[in-house]
Image (cartoon, rainbow, N blue to C red; front, top):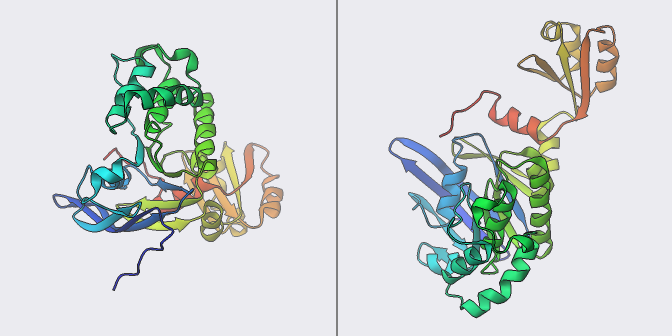
Length: 312
């Protein structure tokens, strides 16, 4: 008998499976999202992140498992669930023929909202997106960061309890990403819940209270970011690069590291003896070193590998 979902869960997916032909892209995946929580989903290309989001939205039917949200069940109550969810997809879906105000107005109509009600919300949404001065501008006149913020504002037009954000900052410059993060933090402080897929580990660490790590459609780890780092990694990383760096990986320095990995011309020593390792490296003046704490990128690479995956 399956264990019942806690009554506090705003969203619950149980034993989701999805196959395309002989390829299983989501394999027995279960997770929950609590009110006010940001759950991050990370994994390499082809891990099943976008397919999972599409099943959560009722856009792709699972081959197995169940989805419930806000006390309702997918697909039976799909329309009622979607009415309380906001979505920002990877691709720009703004209407190029409408200005910012009009994009919000037309999108609000899809939820059955009256024009008068939507128009009351538009000024606050534009202000939230820092687009008040661009109200009459069409998407083609906006920067990439402005378009993403308009997409976020549009996703809030129905005042959703849950936001599904599929790589919302891909393609943005650092300043635009930081502004988007600020807006998402504000939404979390308002008590909204977020399901976020991302390729940016710093984004996941900043925003997510919990992480779900996927690979080949399976859940391979789940937990708070710092807890996962402590569970799977040594506390310190010493990166070594420069002339002769690859040669030192097999020398006496290896005894001072729990694990050694190579990526390109850089050697990564994962260790709890960073002081002794750095002292030993001092006799190699031609080498350059970077000592830092282990982070989510290290976790991601350990769990999913360093090889580049093609888009799937």
